[in-house]
Each structure stands twice: as structure tokens, then as C-alpha cells.
Image (cartoon, rainbow, N blue to C red; front, side, top):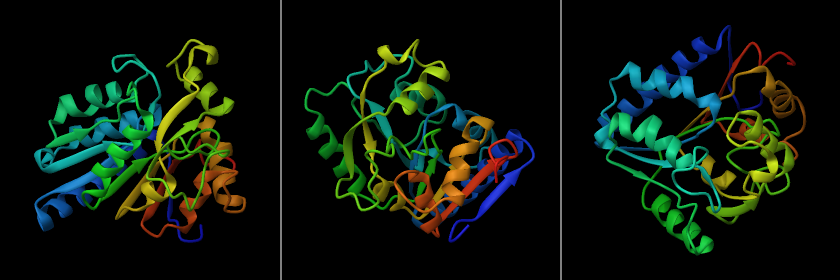
Length: 247
């Protein structure tokens, strides 16, 4: 669709396995060429099988990798079960021991200073890879429609979360109800996510079908932030038959 290659797989397991092979091959090429690599990783239920497959596949010298994550709730304790930092520590860092994993501090007393600190870390090197998903409201990271900006001057910013985004987190089991969810979060902005050499967007499951349809069939617009992927030659979108059902 426009500049964006789209692959559709019969099953989510097939998607996860091919995504793992794609990412493994790209990272090993980066390390072979420069002796190091860097990547931004996403959390969320849609990424779990992919991360498991990537780690199981092997072949990546994780000691040469610098890793980042793309968002975090504001004011959430680092060990809360919904913390994205905890997700990454348990599902990635503790299993593969990267060179370094830079975390957003959701509990920082100075959120704008935290945005600047994390932006400096991102600017200190070229970022090779971004692995991400699409939210049920079409968001990328926590760039919900009402805060998304394709020309955002910020690298990292604090945003309010819309109701559909918050409800998705409840439905995925991370919070008991929307009232107990943080209303604000840190997010890498859309230009930051796209300023990488390769983007692999993994978006399976029927609950993503409407957002995928809007991203690929409607106009490129912040009303569906994921539609911006259609302008990114370095991106690829991976779907299963459920998430592609409305195409």
C-alpha cells in the first residue's frame, strides 16, 4: 500500500516466526558491518510470540545490542505488572543480556527532564531497528489520534491517553478498569520511531482489524496514526488473516 509492503500470514505463529527470522537477519547484518546495533522494542500482547520466537531462534549476539523501549506510563511503579519496563526486563533483558537496555523512568519527579534524558540517549547513536505494533485506535507507541503529529518537534513527550487506548489495556488484562489506569504516559514520537533504518510492524488478531483497515484504506491522517507507515519505505507491516479480515 503506497510505500509500505504488507505481508499476510495464515496464522499468528507463522507471522511471529517470519518476523523473528527477518529481525535476526537484519540485526546480524548490522553487527557484522559495524560491530554493534541498536533497536527500539514494543511491548503489548501482540509482541509476545515474536519476542519469544526471536530469542528461541538464536544467532544474535545480544551483547552487541543497545536497546530502548518506546513508551511507559507516567507515575507507575517500576514493578507494577503493567509497567513496560518490567515487561522488557522479564521478557527480554533477563533472557538475552544485551549490552545495555535504556529504560524510561515512569516515576521520575521531573517528567520533562526525563523526556530530555531519554532523547539524549536516542540521539547519541543511529538507531537501526524499530519493532512496533498498531493499537486498536490506530496508535503507534502512545501517539493516540488526538496527540499524534507527523512533524512532531519532540523526540520523547508526555501525552494523555484516550479512552479507547486505555480500554485496550484493560481488555488485555493489565488493569482492572480504566479508572485505575494512568491517564498520562511517555511516548517516543512518530518522527522518532520512523528515524530508523528498518521498521517491522507486527499487528495480528481480529481486534486490530478495524485499525488495520483504517491505516491502509483511509487517507494518511493522524485520525489513524498508523496510516503514516504508508509513507515509510523502510517499514514492513505483518498481519495475520484475522487482522487483515476487513481488507
